[in-house]
Amino acid sequence: MSDTHRNQVLLRKAFLDEENITHIFHLGDTYEDLDENLDLIEGIEVFKVPGLYHDGYLNRSIHHSIPATVENWKFQLVHFLNDVKKLHKNLDFVLYGHTHRPNFRELNGMYFINPGHLKRSRDRGNDASYIIAETETDKITFNWKKLNKEIFMTKTISR
Image (tube, helix red, strand yellow):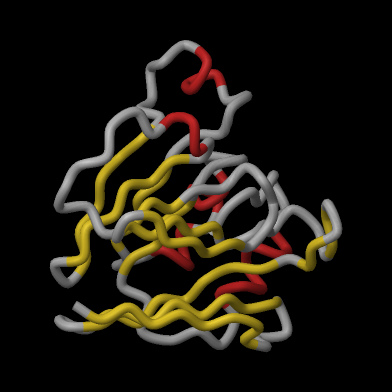
């Protein structure tokens, strides 16, 4: 998820009826939003990066870019895509936010993925959205969902 901007109602709605969540990636704006939802994240591994205007981003006390591994799939998480300085050869995905636009693109065998935003029902011409990823050892499927749980884009990557 990305760009929640303190909208606890939409953040919580994204979790409604989702099952078997083992990891959460929060891609910034606002870094602390999940901290206010301990009931949602209990027993779940959470990775998060700050947005551009967060004090921790501005004073560099919080890393702008962090790695994560799930089922041997390697992710790099950033809020602002320009914060990716060097891409490692064994990296599979770069997950980013900031634009509030759901996106998927492949470049030289690496995938760049944006889940959209949870700022408000509609922002910058895009409905609120997030991604649920289903991981397996040899494939991963990304489902972009609107808040009504409608899947509007799916991408499956196989090794």
